[in-house]
Image (cartoon, rainbow, N blue to C red; front, side, top):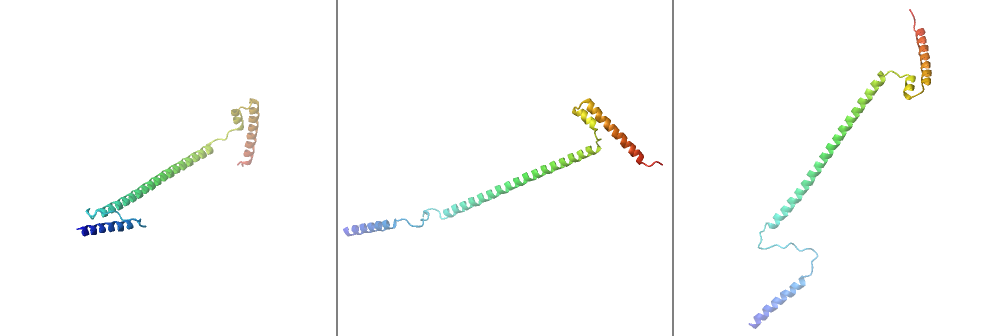
Length: 148
């Protein structure tokens, strides 16, 4: 009985001595603990769930990027439409100004001088000059036209 006890004690001590020598850290990480009593598909299911989460997050980020591009495109189109509307309005205003300028009678210098606040004497002198120039131009146009 003593021998059996001694053999068992040596076996236990030798196992502990061997385990102590193996307890040094390994260069590669040890695999995750697998419960031998657990279900076999548990690890695969968790890996599959992680892959599904990864794919879902990638799909969400792609959808968000597409949405942002679509919003940017819509904003650019709105700005382009506004620019076209401004250009059209400017062209219409310019055309109206050209029509008004074409139909407008020229103002006499004496009228402009009276509006600007020149003295009555200066305005009268300018008006006399304009009338004399107007009379001379009428005489030259009458003599230039052939009479029949």
